[in-house]
Image (cartoon, rainbow, N blue to C red; front, side, top):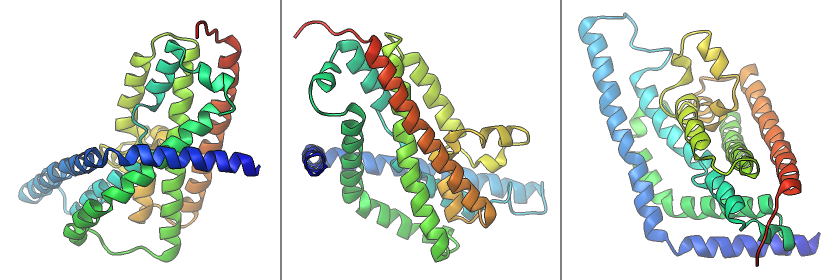
Length: 277
């Protein structure tokens, strides 16, 4: 166990050092993440201004969200997506399978999923270590859109939901990437997944806005826990009994995809054939 922990620590340290080489890229990528927020501020400002001008509704809310709530929601989904997004993970796994690079994980005492997980942990640590300043500036400038800090137990639930969203995003995409053991090309499948992910994770709009039964159907999928759920927890749109039920369901999805990724990997290795040096 001690030797394994030392191995994991060495891998994590090397991955962090590799990520630190590209600090400028992280800065630029972080700044680009916030540009859509400017668009959303103007968009929802125009929507609510139009509602007031036409007196389309007596309420200043849409699906329980005020103008400030919408802006705060999109800022929070930026954080949620930064935790749960795994750019290139599924495609990278499928490519390694197709090119035969996965052989090194079969002949060396390094677990593929464990190694990739440590890589993503290193990426998130470096990303937030560098992105903390831009995040702090943007949230400070937009502090007026937030109703204030939630209670301590809600903050704890929010942090837990972010950690779980990271694990869910990783093992979900890893499971999809393992399909490369059965199919040579999975880019079309990944495109479909990313399309559904963008819409049904809540990144584009709060899932509360969907009419029934679509809102119920979408909220039964694991995608809502990648962006919508953590943001709704912070804004206290989900509270009380529903909050703890949501965290339990999110944990169950994480455990399900941990098991699924292991099962798919084990079955894929049994049918995998590698040739050459």
